[in-house]
Amino acid sequence: LRLAVVRKDAAGVTIEPELGLDPSRRSGRVQFVNSACETLAGDAEVAYRGWLPWAWLALAAEMAGGADAALMLTAAYAATRTQFDKPIGSFQAVKHPLVNVLIAVEQLRTLVYAAASALDAGDPEASLLARMAKAAACEAYPFAGSRAVQLHGGYGFTEDCDAHLYLRRALASRPALGDAREHRAAIAALLLLPDSAHEVEAALRTGA
Image (cartoon, rainbow, N blue to C red):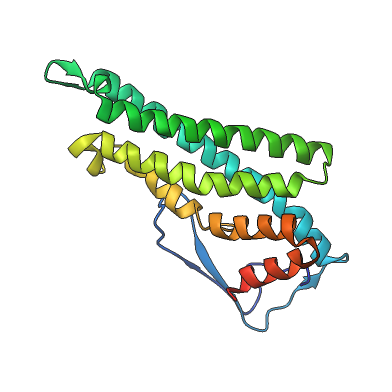
């Protein structure tokens, strides 16, 4: 690994916009062909490992907020939408999934707070907590988004309902910076095989 700065208007640099699952977040593919760059001093491996936990935490925090917003959107709909002269939120088929989402969101929120506090304090277990937060976010946010679409009924399966925006963001964020499988494998290596944790991380990054 090495750190370098490459100007986007430099010769050999091409940026192609991508049409992703989440249209609210811009995505693109950057290619370098014999492009000039300015190498930065410092240990790239150390910088990379130092940056990653903060990135995991930032994305997990965003996903926690999105999951909570999807829950609030759905709960408000369930309280006002009526069927058989009753709010649909009074039916167990709606209440139980909403409670399950609430539990998942609160668990994720707790992990995000714990990771943020640990990183801010320089706790040696901060990286582990950040991984736990991202792993939980990979499950809680898609779950909240899918329940939002489902519990809005037929309306939820149209683009007129904002529920699909949360589900799209959730599914696009899930693999970013590692999915739940990757983080849990790394957590297991850190806890059970600390001497080989770096090798496990490298294998996961390369798909080995």
